[in-house]
Length: 389
Image (cartoon, rainbow, N blue to C red; front, side, top):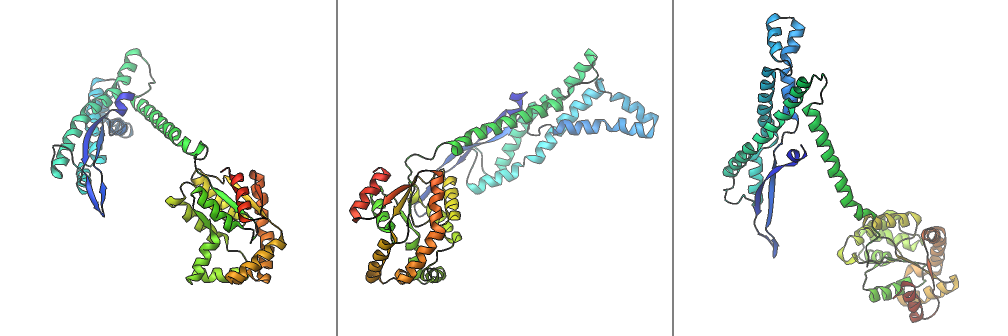
């Protein structure tokens, strides 16, 4: 039963090598068209059972003696019934198969893709060939269906059993069983994708700390040492400001006011960055996660790729040191958001929105605190030790 249900005739298909343009070449492929012995499933038996009970049903309603005599010939287990039932199963097998399997459409699709059956001309000749194979394959399947439909009835009559587990029920049970097995196998194949630990060799590192703590400088050093891209939201936004894009103009006003950019913008940029090939081995996130919704969003985006935040480095520095650093930077770069009043507002915004993110990460794993006071080289050595490089 199982073997006949899954048995199929494979028609070989050849898809030739094709030049796609710009030096791109689609390699040739070899595949096949599976034509099952029982393409129609249980539908031929269902149709035959529906038709064969019509005389008896009509006779019961009309009480017509002629129809009653005709219906008596179609009693389950009687020879006329068995012959008529078997013939109808055969006919409906071919009928239903021709409905659900359109060889003309199949041949046209193959022709559009450049595919062909070896030794057969594309187009109408291919459709005719498929029809021939389909006709030969359907016959043993139809005979099997007829036997499955009739044998339980014949056996039940011979042994005197009134109720019988019909052929349709057997085929349905087998079909459901095979579908269940296929689904379980599919889940088993996909399970490793979602249940295995994150991919080995990938390192995603988040740098946290107040503005002016040195995240940008240390992020660049760490990115060069690990060979990873550095994703700094601030740099991306400042570039947009310089190009006077709509987003840049909005970001300029937000930063000059000492506020932080919205979560939707940050998460959109993060998702785009992680989708690039350069980020496949990991990313240095510099100043990206500044709110708890952003932290949750970044964690969800990483989880989609079987990744997680491997290291969270917190650059610890006092407000006095920050003010001194940013005042010096303002004298060199002339940035409006390094004005003392703007710095004060940025620190207040940091304490209100970003500082809770540190607690969020600590609740989910270890956060490594980096004393961010000293020379650039000294701080870099502390970062390297924390990362393990």
